Amino acid sequence: MLVAPATYTGELNRDLDFGGQNIVLVASAARDSVVIDCEGLGRGLYLHSGETGAAVIDGLVIQNGFANRGGGAYVDGASPTIRNTTFRNNQASLDGGGLYMRDASPTLSEVTFESNVSSISGGGIMCDPSSAPSLSHVHFAENQSGSGAGMSLIFSDDASLFEVTFLANEASSYGGGLYCGGADVSLDEATFIANRSREGGAIALSTSSPSISHATIVNNESVDGGGIYCANGSSPTIRTSIIALNLGEGSVYCADEGTSEPDTRRCCLYGNFISDVPCGTSDNVLYEDPLLCDLPGGDVTLCSNSPCLPTGNPWGLRIGDRGEGCVDCDSTRLPIGRPADAAR
Image (cartoon, rainbow, N blue to C red; front, top):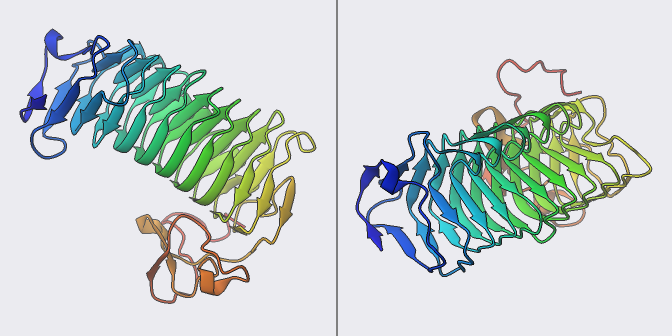
């Protein structure tokens, strides 16, 4: 079904229910030209009848939704494909400001979650038990919640996050970017910049042991664990990642060291508040400036003389999410207003 460019409002254009049919809903013109404006009176989509990956939402904007869970969309027992879509300014009084899912396995690609809000968990996305979403090239920006302001996963072990970006999300308690509770997810090729929370500026883990690789985690802020916060026996494996210039005690912080046992190897840890040395087990770690091209401008590609390029480290590996992006540089510049010694 091709949808003509317009802003659609009114009761017939919200709480859209596919009724178990694998409907294909596609914008007929450029991305963002089709807007479902819920006007704060309901959510955009409600898929709960076993829809499969053949049910497609492509090229839409879902905005100004409101519900107790899933302000923008609610997916329960379904696995739709959502691509080239933006969820913005949606709100949930409980969980999942942009998208709430339960017992669901949707596939999301080229999706943006922007300025969504929930009171409890998952400002952008909330995954409740037995969900296994697959995310590729998904961007979370300026979402807010109690925990997991960008995304929250609860007992969702099979979730896969690839090429995801978390920028300037803010949680009042745990996980400015990402919160995992009993969720051993896969996180690969991820960037976390300028997220904030009380515990775990970028990532907070509770009873979770995800696999984290090729992540760039920089300039996030919290009280404990400016980069990654681990609690209740969380033991992530952290490989080929940059954790640098975060405010909040420790690059990788354990609230229960000896019970939580992160394993950090072949990573670059630098300039984190109080200590760069991670809790748990670590080996083959670079404690030097990763030489990012333009952190104040949000560019975390690497200077050509960076130790995080394959030519700059003993292992011949790219460390972090991004490759070379500029010529040689002397040091990573700090954001404006950040004291030079605040990350030491």
